[in-house]
Structure formats: C-alpha cells, structure tokens
Image (cartoon, rainbow, N blue to C red; front, side, top):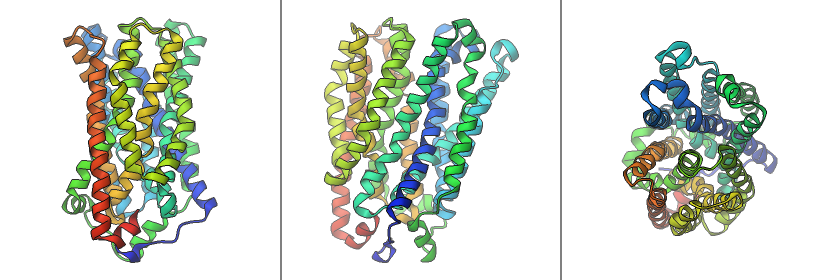
Length: 443
C-alpha cells in the first residue's frame, strides 16, 4: 500500500507541459491510426476484403474487424501494464506507439480480395490484433505520464489533456478522408486512394517517437523504484487489493469509449445507408464536433480540478442519458445544419465523462500497480465498446431500423457510467477516511 513516504515533488511547470504535450501527441497518433480504420471500415473494408460474403454480411464482418482490436486489448493491457509498473511509463509508451504506427502503415500496403483472395483479409485481422495490443497499454500510460509529473491539485486537469488525442485523431482522420473524397473520384478512392491515410501513420510515428524519447521518467515511478515497492505481478495485486475499484473503473469508462464507437462508426454507416445522408456530410459534421472538443476537454479538466473528476463524469453521463433518444429522433429528418448541431450536442455531453475519466481512475488506484489497473480497466471497457457497432446494427435489423434503436444503446451506456461515477466518488471518499496518507499521496 502506498504511504505518505511515496509523495514525490512535482516536476517544474515547463517540464509538466512538455511531458503533457508528448503524451497528447502520442495519444493523437494512436487515435488517428485507430479512427482511420473506423472510417475505413464503415465504407471500404466490406467491399475490398470481404465482398464474397454479400453486402450485409460483409458490413457485419467489417464491424467485427473493429471488435477484434478491442477484444485483444486486455492482453495488451496485461503485457504493457506489467512493463509500465516494472520497467517504467516512458519506455513502455515507446513500445505502444511504435507498434501502432507500424501496424497502421502496413495496412496501407495490404492486398485486397481481388488481388490476393482471403490472404489480405487474414493479414488485416493480424494487423488489427497488433493495433489492439498496442492500444491496451497506451491510454493508461499516457494518463500517468501526464499526471505523475504534476502536483496533486492539478492532476485532474492534466489527466484531461491526453484525452485531446481522441478528437485530434478523429479530426485528422476525418479531414484526410474529406480531402480525399473531394480530390479523388470514387473509383480511384476504392482502387488505391484508401491506402494514403494508413501510410501517413509512418511520418507521424517518427514525430511521436522523438517526443516521447526526449522526456524523463515520471517522478512517481522513480520513487516507487527507489523505495523498492514494485510488485512482481501487478496484474494479480490489483485484483487482490482493489477488486471493487476495478469494477467501478470499467463502468466509468464505458460511455466515453462506447459513445465514440456509436457516433464515429455506427452512426456514420447508419446515416448513409438508412437515412440517406452523404458520407462527406457526416464526416464533416463529426469533424466540426471534434473541433469543439479541443476547447471543451481542457475546460472540463479545469472543472474536474475544482469539483472532482467523479462529479464531472457523472454530470456528463446524466446529460447523455437525457438526450439519448431525442437526438436520434431529430436525426431522422435533419438537414445539414441540424446534423452538425446534433453531432455537437451528442458529442459534448459524453466528452464531459471522457475528459474527467483519467482523473477518476487515477484516484482509484495506488502508484505501484496503477499502470496495470488503469490499462486493464480501460481495456475491458473498450472490449465491450468494440461490439457497440455490431450490437447496434443487430438491434437495428431486429427492429426494422426503428428511429430509437441507437438511443437504447447510448442510454444503457450512460446509465452504467452514471452509476459507476457515483460509486467512484463514494469509494474514494471512504478510502480517504480510512487511509488518508495513502490517498493524499496518490490523488
């Protein structure tokens, strides 16, 4: 158990900002790589790699290639969680971003079904597994890289900054596809143009590796090493010491991750296939919503530093629960202006829960197995979220694509996160009363 002796002096303000930028840039690259495939799967994966299965089955299989990378995340969380708690945050994050960048670049050179039959599809699944393993260790490490350099009073704010990586990645990937759809005719886009976004991951990888190589290990981890408090098997320790906290963390993460799967993958496909929106309009609306997040995420981080991360997560979940059904009802007859407004409203409330998630989870676990705990809890929530497009599509088919079917999925995720945020606040308050020195050191 962490003691008061584990309190470390925070790094200088300049160092904290530099580390936070490195953390955010790396997370942005990971998000760019992952969202490139999300947009890609909604439009290209089925026809290019799984065409013999038929239109509907090919689309379902395309969504399952998203789920594959989510399912494998817990394995990556175990591997990189161990590395992060034993070898250090910085070294581990060099591995995670490297694997993601290389795997994404290789997707850009895969042969399609017409070129190599099922061989290309098999390689695609293998590379998706590599991406998922990488993501299993990326998020938790990025949060710790930022928070463990900061003073306790500012950690909730700095925990929000790496969350900017998700909208930045989404904006970059959507922007690339919008530019390509404007620059290339459909036949060239499906013939070779789709490869360009994946190949762009390679120069972005070089930038991210440089930034992460140039920073120092966190003061918190150095102190854990100096005091000989590293666990031999942190994965087992976290379940032995904080099983309830693990369950709370998984529930708290569900909305923030799942809403992205619902909005950026399923809703884009649903909007084009069922509602008749132009694919480029949906991408543009999503991009505008992402731009707004660049402002709201830091603001929500400031709010979390003032009132507590768990409260901000709870408010975001409650707001999303209230708009889950109205937003999809209005979407049925929306013009482009209304579509943009819906993407903003439907994005800003889950973003509230997303922005404060890192601070909430950081408060739940002590430093000597925190990397493993954050990574595994987040990976479990991501695994569930990976099936959101498939489950929502199945529900849509079962209900004749009734207007409310995506709202059911969004409402359920919101309710689970709301309950988890309430439990997190009570849990951390109880720990503060029984173990004030430990909580003060870790929060």
